[in-house]
Length: 83
Image (cartoon, rainbow, N blue to C red):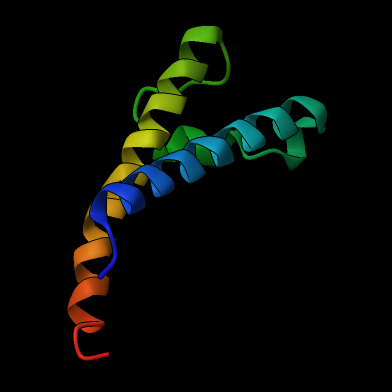
């Protein structure tokens, strides 16, 4: 059985870290090569870029990751019961 708390924290941290990588990369690369339009379309209220928008996006990313962990773990445990 997979632990729901561990998976939720793992997914939340992974998605938040991925957000930081995307924003960092977007600050280095030219405008046409960034994830900024994608981030603005999937994160409610996120507009490129200010300190408050960065932290809003970081929190929203962590919440999305936590949701994935909360949904994934019971499904995984359900299908892994017989093994």
